[in-house]
Length: 62
Length: 190
Image 1 (cartoon, helix red, strand yellow):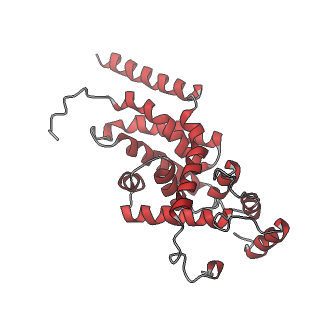
Image 2 (spheres, helix red, strand yellow):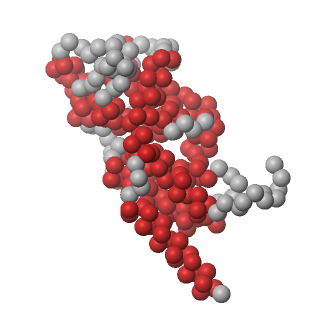
Image 3 (tube, one colour):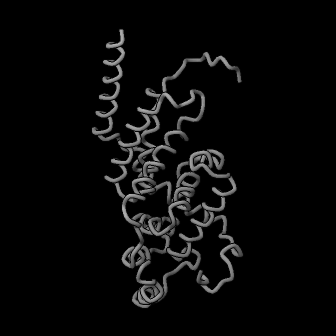
């Protein structure tokens, strides 16, 4: 392993809590789109199809 | 905790939809790509559906689903030949980005930087840092010890600091120089 950035080990310097918080907040922003967007139709269709399949199976068992 | 869970026995099949937004977010974090992420979520739903008989009701459905997504991604990734970060990825990330006055980073650059981080560190940071998982829940999802999650997430943050020059606060004066350094430092196979 090569020595990164001239320091002995990454462990030595911990990043400042403020920086760590900044990173987390930006990551939340980065992924919040996906979490707040409406689900794509392909996904909701898939769920519907699976439910229907189950329902049919159940009906068939009876 | 009683062993007769009487309060509305929620069917995980009904509950799954409430976890899809978070699954999509996690998938984007893993793949770094919107459409690949949605493919991954689709596969996850299909797998989950076929495995619901193995799901223990009352256990953490979210972690269970995330684990399926993660395993699906890992096996896909294994199939593809080793996907490695290239000089261009480093280049894109290094074009970064001092945070603006509000500490906001350019998200594209953050996304590019995330792709350079080893998967296990990346996923730990996404779960704990972005998705609001507790350390324990993330550990359950990734099938490892809580301490491992903690240190992986921290290593990921450190890597981002390095890649994006966050602590130095500013970019080297000459971008060309820094890129040249990156290129020179990157073994060709990297």
